[in-house]
Image (cartoon, rainbow, N blue to C red):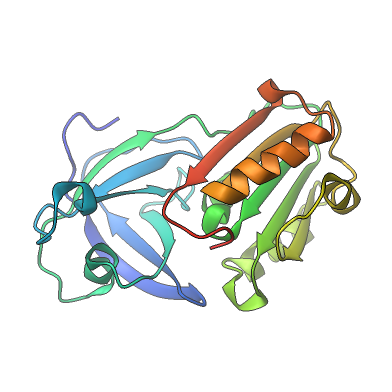
Length: 230
């Protein structure tokens, strides 16, 4: 973990889906992290109250990549507009990594990853890094096809790895029986990781519990500030 804030340099911005942008950064300090962890990015020169100058972002990049990558939905906030502006000259401070939303790489029982919207970000890092020997299912919940970030890359990874099954579902899960039909691998022995907006994660966790998965086998990563499937 960085003991003092690093000063990142933004090297690239690109649109990866409707209202969704990927941002790449370079820092000079060593930055070791595990797939699934997140960082804090502070824009201390923004003309707004201090709490609104800091955001947390799951890392999309794998630990072996030379640059750090994050992805987020765009908005009209001063913070997001500054990140998107190539002419922004304010300071950027980075801290991290943080979090325990990581995958047990020694897992022998099936693993189910459930991503709501931009909650797919930490799972992209995991998929790029490598999967356990156990079968892995990624269920993607999205509001529309145009908002499906990293769709081609994830489909290509699934095609190359018979141990990875990817399911794309549009709209909110309504009931546990719908979830069970989509993901037959979801059993009481399954390790489940759920990432996405606050309302989506709590609702999905309740459905997973209805299918008999014990609480200690479920991890949540909640993205605050986003609508249900954003």
